[in-house]
Image (cartoon, rainbow, N blue to C red; front, side, top):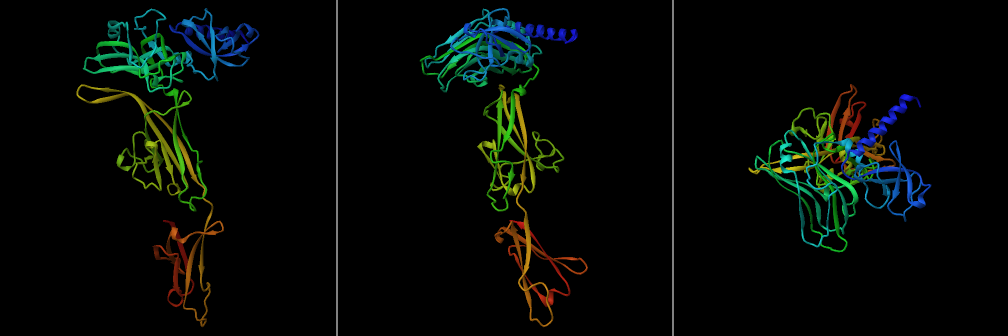
Length: 484
């Protein structure tokens, strides 16, 4: 390694350590064990990015080995103090956010407006009654600094030991705007990463979009817990609580989310023409930080259609699909063609909707902070959209059309043949299909190549030909077959 490269890596180490040390709350980082030589003492050498340091197990009954991914707690962001291993990445406990990743996403603007001592913590012991604690808050400074701010961050280190009940807990900042709007910005358990009932001190946060309005007053900053009725061991602990203005680099946090259309039945029709009741299930699945979650969402399904060339909703266009995509409206097609399930999360597709290949797109719309104005109108901020695309192929086995004549195809003077019956058969592999499934359109071609329709869209697969009147010399008969 040359001197320039070595200097660059040293600079990276310094920057990384500086960024970590600037955070004012405990943080958990993802490390790899590089040495377990002193594991009997609970001491391990671990590596974080390009930094190697010593960390100590917080549970001597648990042993780690080389190459284990572990979570290491850095108290108060101070890299010089004792650092503790609190669990393995693949353990059964809480999965922690990498705090350096949080820094990459959020640029805080100004300081912390929670006016409590550094490292302040508060614990609830729930007993069935709603618990509420008002925090000391820098109201005047918060209002004064509000101008031109676009986002708000609420965060804390949270530990919980709860039964899975229909309760809720979190932090709430209640403010009133000069327009008369009163709104509480709430980081609840529904916003948290991992299992909110069994948290082990990981940092949780939420970023909110702010109204472009002036704040009239701060009504209060609160910790709350409600709806947990089982008293045994139920506890919620908040530590290092933070309320700051923020400027997210990824305002909507979209890189935390991903979407995938799952196709548990596959993406190909094999025998669609034989079994028209075959169907393929398209399931729009959303993930947050790699975990499947089911928000209250609106799902819009589209199929690719090059004829959608104008922004006209009456011609299939929708703003969330864009040009070249046709919105599939519920009720527009019969349920034996396409069918919506689970409030639009699932689209069930039948063979008759896929002539050869069809590409589908689903857009999921969710999230947002709903603000209600004094006049009754509402506005939603921070709406998230995720989409995915999948193609469905109809690989129905080859179908052959055979026309048979009951009296042959060559007729001579005096053989007594008056007419013959032509029968059109649809053959799938070696099987003759049920003729009632199809419509038949008969035509004939004369010696000059002129095509004359005879019977269009008939239910019968048979056509009677009069030898004397219908055949002058040579006639070619054509039958086109259509699936009903």
